Length: 283
Image 1 (cartoon, helix red, strand yellow):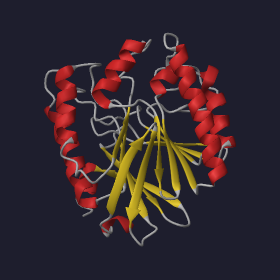
Image 2 (cartoon, helix red, strand yellow):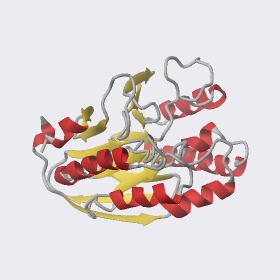
Image 3 (cartoon, helix red, strand yellow):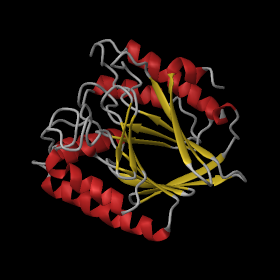
Image 4 (cartoon, helix red, strand yellow):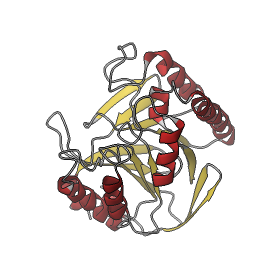
């Protein structure tokens, strides 16, 4: 397995507007992204975070040994929206990540409420940073989206349109520049069982579902990585793979908590989900 032997990479990263740039000083053209989702501190008990903290710390320690090019956490960072105790605990664990490993986070429906307001957005941004942005990583271009705003935009119409227009512009630029891989990371999957399924808690509203997927398809997106379901699921939309990753916190459908490793080289992108037990024993 490629994960058993990963070169130590020296990483330089910075922030410029909405764009995060990761440069690597390495002769290797192979690099690894770690996808975590739903650490959701407080999932079992809002007043006792021990179970989720333990899982999250295990994932962070193993990631430090892997030394990936980037880590993406796709939402539900905490269980109770704007809970200062849970947010502080989340930040304590995140500080365990080696400082030379870039970390990119985005909101889920437990970080921003249904019917979110501009005040909710500001609170999220104050606690966690930007709610949408892009990342350039060697041959890969990544869009990080606020899917809670896509799912529930009625009170933040201008902010929703700003993200959508920005996304259109960035995708057009990325396609023109010829990135080998264009990825989307967000919290919600667009659908679970079928494109035409009814609106429900676990999907993106049908009113905008196909609009987004068709735009991604047209602009060359190859993969959409999401969380939210608390289990692993892979769907297809035309040539795009829609990959839902299981959680750091409690998993459903008799699956195990874990992380997904995404390997990218000159020829292809591959990914595999590892339980926390498997992940800890890879290195």
